[in-house]
Amino acid sequence: MADRPLKVLIAKPGLDGHDRGAKVLARGLRDEGFEVVYTGLRQTPEMVVAAALQEDVDVIGLSILSGAHMTLLPRVCALLREQGLDDVLVVAGGIIPDDDVMALGATGIARVFGPGTTIAEVADFLRANARRADRA
Amino acid sequence: MSDPATAARAGDRRALARLLTAVENRTPAAEAALRVLYPYAGRAHLVGITGAPGTGKSTLVAALIEEVRRGGRSVAVVAVDPTSPITGGAILGDRVRMQARATDPDVFIRSMASRGHAGGLAAASVTAAAVLDAVGFEVVFLETVGTGQSEVEVAAAADTTVVVEAPEMGDEIQAIKAGLLEVADLVVVNKGDRPGAQRAAAQLRAMLSAGVAPARPGRPAPKRPEVLITTATTGEGVAELLAATERHRARQLADGDDRTRLARAEAELMAALEHRLRARLRDPRRLAAGEAALRAIADHVLDPYTAADRLLATLAPE
Ligand SMILES: Nc1nc2c(ncn2[C@@H]2O[C@H](COP(=O)(O)OP(=O)(O)OP(=O)(O)O)[C@@H](O)[C@H]2O)c(=O)[nH]1
Ligand SMILES: [Mg+2]
Image (cartoon, rainbow over the protein chains, first blue to last red):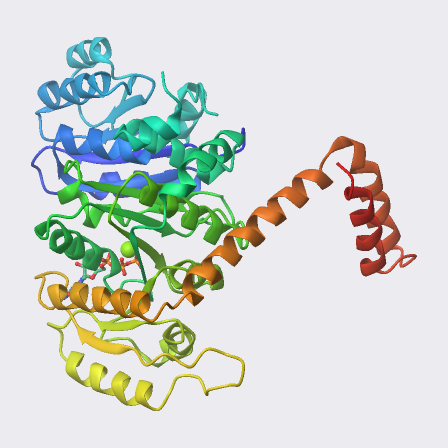
Protein backbone atom coordinates (compact mmCIF):
# COMPACT_ATOMS: atom_id res chain seq x y z
CA MET A 1 0.00 0.00 0.00
CA ALA A 2 1.85 3.01 -1.24
CA ASP A 3 -0.47 5.50 0.42
CA ARG A 4 -0.08 4.10 3.92
CA PRO A 5 1.19 6.84 6.24
CA LEU A 6 4.75 6.49 7.50
CA LYS A 7 4.90 5.46 11.16
CA VAL A 8 7.36 7.36 13.33
CA LEU A 9 8.43 6.79 16.92
CA ILE A 10 9.41 9.93 18.81
CA ALA A 11 11.37 9.28 21.98
CA LYS A 12 13.34 11.32 24.43
CA PRO A 13 16.21 9.28 25.80
CA GLY A 14 18.25 10.57 28.71
CA LEU A 15 17.45 12.00 32.07
CA ASP A 16 16.63 15.64 31.41
CA GLY A 17 13.02 16.31 32.15
CA HIS A 18 11.50 18.41 29.45
CA ASP A 19 9.93 17.34 26.23
CA ARG A 20 8.33 20.41 24.73
CA GLY A 21 10.44 20.11 21.58
CA ALA A 22 9.58 16.44 21.15
CA LYS A 23 5.88 17.17 21.52
CA VAL A 24 6.00 20.02 19.02
CA LEU A 25 7.72 17.69 16.55
CA ALA A 26 5.14 14.93 17.19
CA ARG A 27 2.26 17.28 16.48
CA GLY A 28 4.03 18.79 13.49
CA LEU A 29 4.60 15.40 11.91
CA ARG A 30 0.99 14.44 12.60
CA ASP A 31 0.00 17.54 10.64
CA GLU A 32 2.33 16.41 7.85
CA GLY A 33 0.38 13.13 7.61
CA PHE A 34 2.59 10.84 9.69
CA GLU A 35 1.40 8.37 12.29
CA VAL A 36 3.41 9.34 15.35
CA VAL A 37 3.91 7.10 18.36
CA TYR A 38 5.03 9.23 21.26
CA THR A 39 6.85 7.43 24.07
CA GLY A 40 7.76 10.34 26.28
CA LEU A 41 10.56 11.22 28.62
CA ARG A 42 13.44 9.35 30.21
CA GLN A 43 13.52 6.45 27.79
CA THR A 44 16.37 3.98 27.99
CA PRO A 45 17.75 2.73 24.66
CA GLU A 46 16.18 -0.67 25.49
CA MET A 47 12.73 0.91 25.91
CA VAL A 48 13.07 2.83 22.64
CA VAL A 49 14.05 -0.26 20.70
CA ALA A 50 11.37 -2.46 22.29
CA ALA A 51 8.73 0.13 21.37
CA ALA A 52 10.08 0.46 17.82
CA LEU A 53 9.95 -3.29 17.39
CA GLN A 54 6.42 -3.75 18.74
CA GLU A 55 5.08 -0.77 16.82
CA ASP A 56 6.87 -1.78 13.59
CA VAL A 57 7.82 1.82 12.86
CA ASP A 58 9.54 3.09 9.74
CA VAL A 59 11.40 5.88 11.51
CA ILE A 60 12.78 6.62 14.98
CA GLY A 61 13.27 10.25 15.95
CA LEU A 62 15.37 10.78 19.05
CA SER A 63 15.22 14.13 20.73
CA ILE A 64 18.18 14.72 22.98
CA LEU A 65 19.47 17.64 25.03
CA SER A 66 21.25 15.95 27.86
CA GLY A 67 24.77 15.82 26.46
CA ALA A 68 24.72 12.04 26.76
CA HIS A 69 24.13 11.72 23.02
CA MET A 70 27.47 10.02 22.32
CA THR A 71 26.55 7.09 24.53
CA LEU A 72 22.76 6.89 24.14
CA LEU A 73 22.39 7.31 20.38
CA PRO A 74 24.98 4.72 19.30
CA ARG A 75 23.50 2.33 21.88
CA VAL A 76 20.05 2.65 20.26
CA CYS A 77 21.56 1.93 16.84
CA ALA A 78 23.50 -1.07 18.13
CA LEU A 79 20.40 -2.54 19.77
CA LEU A 80 18.40 -2.01 16.59
CA ARG A 81 20.97 -3.98 14.62
CA GLU A 82 20.93 -6.70 17.28
CA GLN A 83 17.16 -7.00 16.87
CA GLY A 84 17.33 -7.06 13.09
CA LEU A 85 15.77 -3.62 12.80
CA ASP A 86 18.50 -2.33 10.48
CA ASP A 87 16.01 -0.96 8.00
CA VAL A 88 14.53 1.56 10.43
CA LEU A 89 15.62 5.11 9.65
CA VAL A 90 17.05 6.79 12.76
CA VAL A 91 17.34 10.55 13.06
CA ALA A 92 18.15 12.80 16.00
CA GLY A 93 17.32 16.33 17.02
CA GLY A 94 19.18 18.52 19.46
CA ILE A 95 22.21 20.70 19.93
CA ILE A 96 25.06 18.43 18.92
CA PRO A 97 28.60 19.61 18.00
CA ASP A 98 29.69 19.06 14.38
CA ASP A 99 32.43 16.55 15.25
CA ASP A 100 29.91 14.44 17.12
CA VAL A 101 27.45 14.63 14.22
CA MET A 102 30.09 13.05 11.99
CA ALA A 103 30.78 10.31 14.51
CA LEU A 104 27.07 9.63 15.02
CA GLY A 105 26.64 9.26 11.27
CA ALA A 106 29.11 6.40 11.35
CA THR A 107 27.11 4.62 14.08
CA GLY A 108 23.86 4.70 12.12
CA ILE A 109 22.18 8.06 12.80
CA ALA A 110 21.09 9.12 9.32
CA ARG A 111 20.73 12.80 10.11
CA VAL A 112 20.98 15.22 13.02
CA PHE A 113 18.58 18.15 12.92
CA GLY A 114 19.89 21.20 14.71
CA PRO A 115 18.00 24.12 16.23
CA GLY A 116 15.93 26.08 13.75
CA THR A 117 15.07 23.10 11.56
CA THR A 118 11.51 23.38 10.30
CA ILE A 119 8.99 20.56 10.59
CA ALA A 120 8.64 20.61 6.80
CA GLU A 121 12.38 19.92 6.38
CA VAL A 122 12.17 16.98 8.77
CA ALA A 123 9.07 15.64 7.04
CA ASP A 124 10.66 15.89 3.59
CA PHE A 125 13.80 14.12 4.77
CA LEU A 126 11.80 11.29 6.32
CA ARG A 127 9.61 10.85 3.25
CA ALA A 128 12.66 10.76 1.00
CA ASN A 129 14.73 8.38 3.12
CA ALA A 130 12.46 6.05 5.06
CA ARG A 131 12.61 2.67 3.43
CA ARG A 132 9.64 0.45 3.45
CA ALA A 133 11.28 -2.51 1.83
CA ASP A 134 9.69 -5.97 1.83
CA ARG A 135 6.41 -4.68 3.21
CA ALA A 136 3.98 -7.32 2.11
CA MET B 1 12.86 -18.45 7.20
CA SER B 2 9.56 -19.92 8.38
CA ASP B 3 6.29 -18.24 7.51
CA PRO B 4 5.33 -15.20 9.61
CA ALA B 5 2.41 -16.89 11.37
CA THR B 6 4.51 -19.81 12.53
CA ALA B 7 7.37 -17.52 13.53
CA ALA B 8 4.99 -15.28 15.50
CA ARG B 9 3.53 -18.29 17.30
CA ALA B 10 7.03 -19.45 18.15
CA GLY B 11 7.59 -16.17 19.99
CA ASP B 12 9.26 -14.07 17.28
CA ARG B 13 8.09 -10.57 18.29
CA ARG B 14 9.40 -8.94 15.16
CA ALA B 15 7.39 -11.34 13.00
CA LEU B 16 4.35 -10.60 15.19
CA ALA B 17 4.81 -6.84 14.81
CA ARG B 18 5.09 -7.12 11.04
CA LEU B 19 2.04 -9.33 10.90
CA LEU B 20 0.04 -6.70 12.79
CA THR B 21 1.12 -4.14 10.20
CA ALA B 22 -0.10 -6.47 7.46
CA VAL B 23 -3.43 -6.82 9.31
CA GLU B 24 -3.73 -3.05 9.54
CA ASN B 25 -3.05 -2.74 5.81
CA ARG B 26 -5.26 -5.73 4.99
CA THR B 27 -2.68 -7.30 2.70
CA PRO B 28 -2.86 -10.76 1.14
CA ALA B 29 0.02 -11.76 3.47
CA ALA B 30 -2.23 -10.99 6.43
CA GLU B 31 -4.97 -13.21 5.01
CA ALA B 32 -2.55 -16.09 4.56
CA ALA B 33 -1.34 -15.70 8.15
CA LEU B 34 -4.88 -15.52 9.50
CA ARG B 35 -5.72 -18.84 7.90
CA VAL B 36 -2.94 -20.36 9.97
CA LEU B 37 -3.60 -18.43 13.18
CA TYR B 38 -7.37 -18.34 13.46
CA PRO B 39 -7.79 -21.84 14.92
CA TYR B 40 -5.44 -20.88 17.77
CA ALA B 41 -7.40 -17.75 18.74
CA GLY B 42 -10.40 -17.66 21.06
CA ARG B 43 -8.62 -18.40 24.32
CA ALA B 44 -7.58 -14.95 25.52
CA HIS B 45 -9.81 -12.74 27.61
CA LEU B 46 -10.50 -9.73 25.40
CA VAL B 47 -11.24 -6.63 27.48
CA GLY B 48 -12.40 -3.41 25.80
CA ILE B 49 -11.61 -0.13 27.56
CA THR B 50 -13.44 2.93 26.31
CA GLY B 51 -14.55 6.31 27.60
CA ALA B 52 -14.36 10.03 26.95
CA PRO B 53 -10.97 11.60 26.13
CA GLY B 54 -8.68 12.08 29.10
CA THR B 55 -10.59 9.99 31.62
CA GLY B 56 -7.43 7.96 32.28
CA LYS B 57 -7.96 4.89 30.08
CA SER B 58 -4.31 4.42 29.17
CA THR B 59 -3.11 4.98 32.72
CA LEU B 60 -5.70 2.45 33.82
CA VAL B 61 -4.55 -0.06 31.19
CA ALA B 62 -0.97 0.43 32.45
CA ALA B 63 -2.13 -0.31 36.01
CA LEU B 64 -4.10 -3.34 34.77
CA ILE B 65 -0.98 -4.61 32.98
CA GLU B 66 0.86 -4.49 36.31
CA GLU B 67 -1.94 -6.39 37.98
CA VAL B 68 -2.13 -9.07 35.28
CA ARG B 69 1.65 -9.50 35.42
CA ARG B 70 1.53 -9.83 39.20
CA GLY B 71 -0.69 -12.83 38.60
CA GLY B 72 1.91 -14.21 36.18
CA ARG B 73 -0.14 -14.00 33.01
CA SER B 74 0.97 -12.50 29.70
CA VAL B 75 -0.83 -9.46 28.34
CA ALA B 76 -1.14 -7.52 25.11
CA VAL B 77 -2.68 -4.14 24.30
CA VAL B 78 -4.16 -2.70 21.12
CA ALA B 79 -4.58 1.06 21.60
CA VAL B 80 -6.47 2.94 18.90
CA ASP B 81 -6.20 6.70 18.45
CA PRO B 82 -8.07 8.81 15.93
CA THR B 83 -6.63 9.69 12.52
CA SER B 84 -6.94 13.34 11.56
CA PRO B 85 -9.49 13.43 8.74
CA ILE B 86 -7.70 16.41 7.21
CA THR B 87 -4.05 15.32 7.13
CA GLY B 88 -4.38 11.55 7.51
CA GLY B 89 -1.83 11.74 10.32
CA ALA B 90 -2.30 10.68 13.92
CA ILE B 91 -0.70 11.01 17.32
CA LEU B 92 -0.63 7.63 18.98
CA GLY B 93 -0.21 8.83 22.55
CA ASP B 94 -1.55 5.95 24.64
CA ARG B 95 1.71 4.06 24.76
CA VAL B 96 3.46 6.83 26.69
CA ARG B 97 1.53 5.77 29.82
CA MET B 98 2.49 2.12 29.38
CA GLN B 99 6.19 2.36 28.53
CA ALA B 100 7.28 1.10 31.95
CA ARG B 101 6.51 -2.43 30.73
CA ALA B 102 7.95 -1.96 27.22
CA THR B 103 10.81 -4.41 27.73
CA ASP B 104 8.84 -7.12 29.55
CA PRO B 105 8.85 -10.09 27.13
CA ASP B 106 5.36 -11.11 28.29
CA VAL B 107 3.87 -7.72 27.45
CA PHE B 108 3.19 -6.48 23.92
CA ILE B 109 1.78 -3.05 23.22
CA ARG B 110 0.62 -1.94 19.81
CA SER B 111 -0.78 1.44 18.81
CA MET B 112 -3.07 1.82 15.81
CA ALA B 113 -4.49 4.83 14.02
CA SER B 114 -8.20 4.62 13.22
CA ARG B 115 -7.46 5.50 9.56
CA GLY B 116 -11.05 6.51 8.94
CA HIS B 117 -12.10 3.22 7.38
CA ALA B 118 -15.76 3.14 8.38
CA GLY B 119 -16.64 -0.20 9.93
CA GLY B 120 -13.16 -1.42 9.02
CA LEU B 121 -11.73 -0.09 12.25
CA ALA B 122 -13.47 -2.76 14.27
CA ALA B 123 -12.30 -5.36 11.77
CA ALA B 124 -8.65 -4.29 11.83
CA SER B 125 -8.37 -3.93 15.60
CA VAL B 126 -10.42 -7.01 16.44
CA THR B 127 -8.34 -9.01 13.96
CA ALA B 128 -5.17 -7.60 15.55
CA ALA B 129 -6.49 -8.75 18.92
CA ALA B 130 -7.20 -12.21 17.46
CA VAL B 131 -3.61 -12.43 16.23
CA LEU B 132 -2.30 -11.52 19.72
CA ASP B 133 -4.67 -14.11 21.17
CA ALA B 134 -3.47 -16.76 18.71
CA VAL B 135 0.20 -16.25 19.54
CA GLY B 136 -0.60 -16.91 23.19
CA PHE B 137 -1.31 -13.68 25.06
CA GLU B 138 -3.74 -14.54 27.84
CA VAL B 139 -5.32 -11.12 28.31
CA VAL B 140 -5.76 -8.56 25.54
CA PHE B 141 -6.83 -4.98 26.28
CA LEU B 142 -8.38 -2.94 23.49
CA GLU B 143 -8.35 0.80 24.22
CA THR B 144 -10.42 3.23 22.14
CA VAL B 145 -11.73 6.74 22.72
CA GLY B 146 -15.47 6.53 23.19
CA THR B 147 -16.43 9.41 20.95
CA GLY B 148 -17.05 7.79 17.56
CA GLN B 149 -19.49 5.06 16.64
CA SER B 150 -16.82 2.74 15.27
CA GLU B 151 -14.54 3.32 18.26
CA VAL B 152 -17.32 2.29 20.61
CA GLU B 153 -18.01 -0.76 18.44
CA VAL B 154 -14.41 -1.88 18.88
CA ALA B 155 -14.67 -1.90 22.65
CA ALA B 156 -18.13 -3.45 22.49
CA ALA B 157 -16.74 -6.34 20.43
CA ALA B 158 -14.62 -7.45 23.40
CA ASP B 159 -15.66 -10.21 25.81
CA THR B 160 -15.85 -7.67 28.60
CA THR B 161 -16.40 -3.97 27.96
CA VAL B 162 -15.27 -1.44 30.55
CA VAL B 163 -16.50 2.15 30.24
CA VAL B 164 -14.28 4.67 32.04
CA GLU B 165 -15.65 7.89 33.48
CA ALA B 166 -13.97 10.62 35.48
CA PRO B 167 -15.57 12.70 38.26
CA GLU B 168 -15.12 16.11 36.69
CA MET B 169 -16.94 15.31 33.47
CA GLY B 170 -19.49 17.99 32.75
CA ASP B 171 -22.99 17.89 31.35
CA GLU B 172 -21.74 18.09 27.78
CA ILE B 173 -20.53 14.54 28.17
CA GLN B 174 -23.96 13.23 29.20
CA ALA B 175 -25.02 12.47 25.65
CA ILE B 176 -21.89 10.44 24.91
CA LYS B 177 -22.29 8.81 28.29
CA ALA B 178 -25.72 7.34 27.61
CA GLY B 179 -24.56 5.74 24.35
CA LEU B 180 -21.44 4.43 26.01
CA LEU B 181 -23.17 3.06 29.06
CA GLU B 182 -25.34 0.88 26.87
CA VAL B 183 -22.30 -1.20 25.89
CA ALA B 184 -20.77 -1.34 29.39
CA ASP B 185 -20.33 -4.60 31.26
CA LEU B 186 -18.49 -2.64 33.94
CA VAL B 187 -18.38 1.07 34.64
CA VAL B 188 -15.34 2.63 36.26
CA VAL B 189 -15.15 6.04 37.85
CA ASN B 190 -11.42 6.69 37.56
CA LYS B 191 -9.52 9.52 39.27
CA GLY B 192 -10.93 8.31 42.54
CA ASP B 193 -8.52 10.70 44.26
CA ARG B 194 -10.42 13.67 42.87
CA PRO B 195 -13.32 15.27 44.71
CA GLY B 196 -16.70 14.12 43.47
CA ALA B 197 -15.67 10.56 42.60
CA GLN B 198 -17.96 9.00 45.21
CA ARG B 199 -20.82 11.22 44.16
CA ALA B 200 -20.29 10.43 40.46
CA ALA B 201 -20.29 6.72 41.26
CA ALA B 202 -23.51 7.05 43.28
CA GLN B 203 -25.19 8.95 40.43
CA LEU B 204 -24.11 6.33 37.92
CA ARG B 205 -25.39 3.52 40.13
CA ALA B 206 -28.76 5.25 40.45
CA MET B 207 -28.91 5.87 36.73
CA LEU B 208 -27.95 2.31 35.84
CA SER B 209 -30.34 0.65 38.25
CA ALA B 210 -33.12 2.62 36.55
CA GLY B 211 -31.94 1.00 33.30
CA VAL B 212 -29.96 2.74 30.57
CA ALA B 213 -32.17 1.52 27.79
CA PRO B 214 -35.67 0.13 28.18
CA ALA B 215 -36.09 -3.62 27.70
CA ARG B 216 -37.42 -4.40 24.24
CA PRO B 217 -38.78 -7.65 22.92
CA GLY B 218 -36.31 -9.55 20.77
CA ARG B 219 -33.38 -7.62 22.17
CA PRO B 220 -30.93 -8.80 24.79
CA ALA B 221 -31.90 -7.70 28.29
CA PRO B 222 -30.25 -4.39 29.20
CA LYS B 223 -27.02 -4.84 31.07
CA ARG B 224 -26.82 -3.90 34.73
CA PRO B 225 -23.15 -3.02 34.98
CA GLU B 226 -21.36 -2.87 38.30
CA VAL B 227 -19.82 0.54 39.10
CA LEU B 228 -16.30 0.62 40.54
CA ILE B 229 -13.94 3.40 41.60
CA THR B 230 -10.25 3.36 40.68
CA THR B 231 -7.25 5.65 40.96
CA ALA B 232 -5.13 4.54 38.04
CA THR B 233 -2.17 6.68 39.06
CA THR B 234 -1.77 4.86 42.40
CA GLY B 235 -3.28 1.50 41.47
CA GLU B 236 -6.05 1.86 44.05
CA GLY B 237 -9.06 -0.27 43.09
CA VAL B 238 -7.33 -1.78 40.07
CA ALA B 239 -7.03 -5.31 41.51
CA GLU B 240 -10.78 -5.15 42.23
CA LEU B 241 -11.43 -4.01 38.66
CA LEU B 242 -9.41 -6.87 37.19
CA ALA B 243 -11.24 -9.30 39.48
CA ALA B 244 -14.57 -7.87 38.29
CA THR B 245 -13.62 -8.37 34.64
CA GLU B 246 -12.75 -11.97 35.46
CA ARG B 247 -16.05 -12.53 37.26
CA HIS B 248 -17.86 -11.15 34.22
CA ARG B 249 -15.94 -13.48 31.94
CA ALA B 250 -16.57 -16.50 34.20
CA ARG B 251 -20.31 -15.74 34.29
CA GLN B 252 -20.36 -15.38 30.52
CA LEU B 253 -18.68 -18.76 30.05
CA ALA B 254 -20.87 -20.45 32.68
CA ASP B 255 -24.06 -19.08 31.09
CA GLY B 256 -22.92 -20.35 27.70
CA ASP B 257 -23.47 -16.76 26.57
CA ASP B 258 -22.51 -16.78 22.92
CA ARG B 259 -23.97 -13.41 22.03
CA THR B 260 -20.71 -11.51 22.37
CA ARG B 261 -18.76 -13.99 20.33
CA LEU B 262 -21.41 -14.20 17.63
CA ALA B 263 -21.70 -10.42 17.44
CA ARG B 264 -17.94 -10.20 17.05
CA ALA B 265 -18.00 -12.88 14.37
CA GLU B 266 -20.72 -10.97 12.55
CA ALA B 267 -18.66 -7.77 12.56
CA GLU B 268 -15.65 -9.67 11.24
CA LEU B 269 -17.64 -11.44 8.55
CA MET B 270 -19.38 -8.28 7.36
CA ALA B 271 -16.05 -6.47 7.14
CA ALA B 272 -14.50 -9.33 5.18
CA LEU B 273 -17.49 -9.46 2.82
CA GLU B 274 -17.30 -5.74 2.24
CA HIS B 275 -13.59 -5.97 1.60
CA ARG B 276 -14.06 -8.75 -0.95
CA LEU B 277 -16.96 -7.00 -2.63
CA ARG B 278 -15.01 -3.77 -3.01
CA ALA B 279 -11.99 -5.62 -4.36
CA ARG B 280 -14.12 -7.36 -6.98
CA LEU B 281 -15.84 -4.17 -8.00
CA ARG B 282 -12.42 -2.56 -8.48
CA ASP B 283 -11.43 -5.35 -10.86
CA PRO B 284 -10.48 -3.66 -14.15
CA ARG B 285 -12.89 -5.90 -16.07
CA ARG B 286 -15.78 -4.50 -14.02
CA LEU B 287 -14.67 -0.90 -13.81
CA ALA B 288 -16.62 0.10 -16.90
CA ALA B 289 -19.83 -1.50 -15.62
CA GLY B 290 -19.35 0.24 -12.27
CA GLU B 291 -18.84 3.61 -13.88
CA ALA B 292 -21.83 3.10 -16.14
CA ALA B 293 -23.93 2.32 -13.07
CA LEU B 294 -22.73 5.49 -11.32
CA ARG B 295 -23.54 7.57 -14.37
CA ALA B 296 -26.99 5.98 -14.69
CA ILE B 297 -27.80 6.68 -11.02
CA ALA B 298 -26.46 10.24 -11.19
CA ASP B 299 -28.58 10.92 -14.26
CA HIS B 300 -31.59 9.28 -12.58
CA VAL B 301 -31.89 6.77 -15.39
CA LEU B 302 -31.60 3.93 -12.91
CA ASP B 303 -32.41 3.70 -9.21
CA PRO B 304 -29.52 2.59 -6.95
CA TYR B 305 -31.11 -0.74 -5.94
CA THR B 306 -31.67 -1.88 -9.51
CA ALA B 307 -28.13 -0.82 -10.39
CA ALA B 308 -26.79 -2.76 -7.39
CA ASP B 309 -28.74 -5.88 -8.38
CA ARG B 310 -27.30 -5.71 -11.89
CA LEU B 311 -23.75 -5.31 -10.61
CA LEU B 312 -24.21 -8.17 -8.17
CA ALA B 313 -25.48 -10.36 -10.97
CA THR B 314 -22.21 -9.81 -12.86
CA LEU B 315 -20.30 -10.88 -9.73
CA ALA B 316 -21.99 -14.18 -9.17
CA PRO B 317 -19.79 -16.50 -11.21
CA GLU B 318 -16.08 -16.66 -10.39
N1 LIG C 1 -5.60 12.47 39.58
C1 LIG C 1 -5.61 11.45 38.72
N2 LIG C 1 -5.19 11.65 37.45
C2 LIG C 1 -5.23 10.58 36.61
C3 LIG C 1 -5.69 9.32 37.00
N3 LIG C 1 -5.63 8.48 35.94
C4 LIG C 1 -5.13 9.21 34.92
N4 LIG C 1 -4.88 10.47 35.32
C5 LIG C 1 -4.32 11.56 34.50
O1 LIG C 1 -5.24 11.92 33.49
C6 LIG C 1 -4.53 12.33 32.32
C7 LIG C 1 -5.02 11.54 31.11
O2 LIG C 1 -4.66 10.16 31.32
P1 LIG C 1 -4.66 9.12 30.13
O3 LIG C 1 -4.42 7.80 30.75
O4 LIG C 1 -3.77 9.55 29.04
O5 LIG C 1 -6.16 9.25 29.65
P2 LIG C 1 -6.87 8.59 28.38
O6 LIG C 1 -8.28 8.39 28.74
O7 LIG C 1 -6.11 7.38 27.95
O8 LIG C 1 -6.72 9.73 27.31
P3 LIG C 1 -7.01 9.64 25.74
O9 LIG C 1 -6.44 8.33 25.24
O10 LIG C 1 -6.30 10.83 25.19
O11 LIG C 1 -8.49 9.72 25.58
C8 LIG C 1 -3.06 12.12 32.62
O12 LIG C 1 -2.52 13.35 33.01
C9 LIG C 1 -3.07 11.15 33.76
O13 LIG C 1 -1.93 11.24 34.59
C10 LIG C 1 -6.12 9.15 38.37
O14 LIG C 1 -6.54 8.08 38.80
N5 LIG C 1 -6.07 10.25 39.16
MG1 LIG D 1 -5.35 6.90 26.06
